[in-house]
Length: 329
Ligand SMILES: [Mn+2]
View 1 (tube, protein in one colour):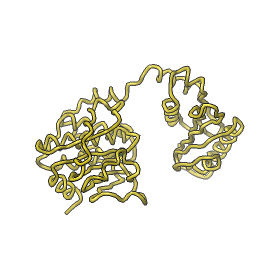
View 2: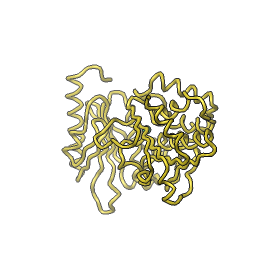
View 3: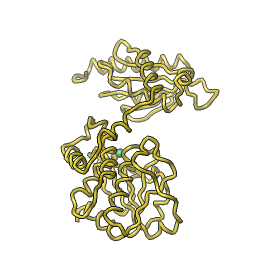
View 4: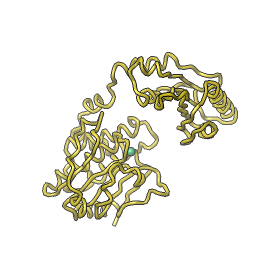
């Protein structure tokens, strides 16, 4: 029996179903979780399907809200469906472990500590967990996918695929999205909730582009101070987000945000958010009290001089890469 059939069979066996997501929620895990709950409630009115969550859904509150807490005994003879979560440590609510069976549906790369669940459907080639959830129910008779669920899944696919731009977008992503649209997605509404931006953030974004510089070999960078964050009324996390604005500068293979470490009040450290395309930059981060992924790393400069040093090293790295590789732009 194929994995999707097994998942469906387990779901049908249980009268009580709990849905779980990963910590630091995003559009995909919220969308997939809300949709699983809605589809199963609409398809099996006698089943109790719950998505208990201690945080509100933030910018994704338009997709719905979580269910009230229930006594722990309720979890015992239930099945857990965990969406979009690579390993157990990242599951935001530990009560999944009380459930009798666990279904994992995820699209993150497989990892050493990633084996959990009675049944695990893991496919890293997928754009999103929402795409997988949509496929699971769309291709079967007897499941009701109404507008609410379709919009939740559409939101997950759109946000996790960078608006259908990432490599993970396949013909199947588009086919599934088409079917969701047939189920009545209000795209104008969804896009308004996801992409409209507060005025102070837009002014800050303008400030970022205004103050961005580019090195000789192609490193786009910007410096953000504590005073800048105060001026625009942004938290560290909100201000730090804007590193992605530097990702689309033609000729720049690397981009860096140098931002005051305001998390500890007396720190003079500068956090260095390093990003790149084609070439890795984690080696540079590792030399400066940091590390991370090949194309997205973080480091710490303990002085303005060290920040200069990191910029110089990155510039040199880009020079080397450009002189020994073709196909970048
Ligand atoms: Mn995801």
